[in-house]
Image (cartoon, rainbow, N blue to C red; front, side, top):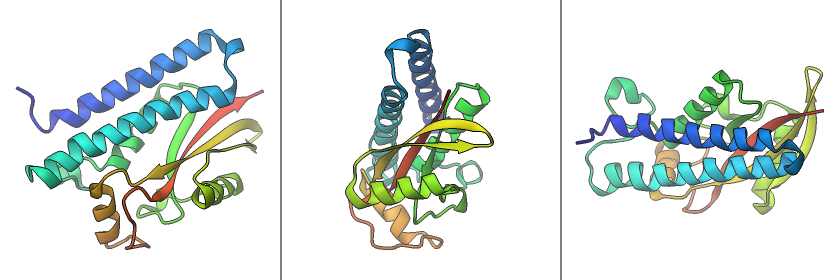
Length: 192
């Protein structure tokens, strides 16, 4: 029998394994994949896992069955991590493994200040994605390293997203709607 508290850990572990496997395959076949194709593949895994976690785990257990809540202080409250926290934990794990890329969830309206754009390119990417919902691709140089940067719309895929953002005391907005763009997943890949 699975316990509620074991779901996020297994989900995160599965997400990390899928991403690392994708990167390993892409690394072995470097000449066959462009940075954009690699970013698109990474985002596909992130977006799929995030949507499933949000709708199947959080929305179901919190909103439908009312068994357990998702909470930003999930460890202290014996709750589920918020979908944004799951994404951040996955991103931190990828960084710990020196996987050769990084990703983050960013927004023009972040609840957590860590999720605001930090570079000119991130700001440009967010503005572009929020304007038309299309993927954004570009390049930037940080500390002497050149990067391919890709940004993908992060939409409110479930009512749990909308309710959390609209009711949160630190949210700069309280009028999000289902399927509205709330920010972007930004992926950075070093290039020569």
